[in-house]
Length: 163
Image 1 (cartoon, rainbow, N blue to C red):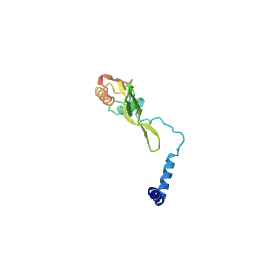
Image 2 (cartoon, helix red, strand yellow; image 1 turned 90 degrees about the vertical axis):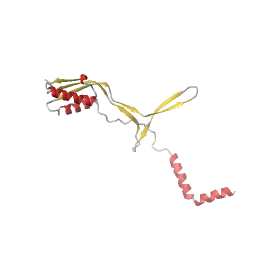
Image 3 (spheres, rainbow, N blue to C red; image 1 turned 90 degrees about the horizontal axis):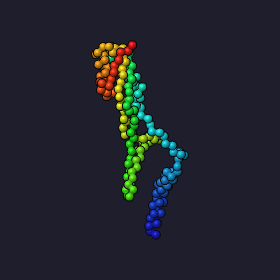
Image 4 (tube, rainbow, N blue to C red; image 1 turned 45 degrees about the horizontal axis):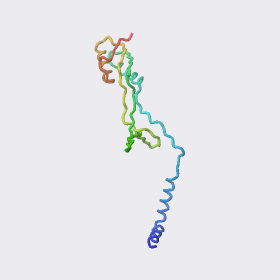
C-alpha cells in the first residue's frame, strides 16, 4: 500500500508532466501523411557526353591559332553512380547475405540513395577538327589539352584540318 500511495502522490505532484508525456506518446502513435511514397534517387549533376564535347570545343577554340574547333569523343563506358549499401549476413545452415541501399532523407523529407562514389566515363578516342590544324604547335597544344582532360594517350587523339 505504501508503494501505491507514493506513486499516486508523485502522479498528483507531477500531474502536468505526466499529462504532457501521455499526450506526446499519443501523438507519436498517430500516423500522419497518408501513404509513404519513395522517390527516385536524386540525380547527380554530371556533365553528359554532348556537354563535355561542347565545353571542350569552346575551350580549345581559345588556343592561339586554333580557330573554330569541333570535338567528338568516343566513350567506352558511361557515367554511373555507385550507392552505399549495408550488408547483413545471416548464419546457420543456409548462409545468406542481403544488400540494402542506404537511404538518406533531407530537410524536405525527400529520400535518395547515399552516393558512395561516381564512376566517370572512360574514353576510347577523340577526333578534333579545327581550322588551325596545319600548324604543328597548335596541333600539339590541342592534343595535350585533350589528353589531360580525358586521360587519353596521344595515340588515341586525332587532330584534323577543317575545310
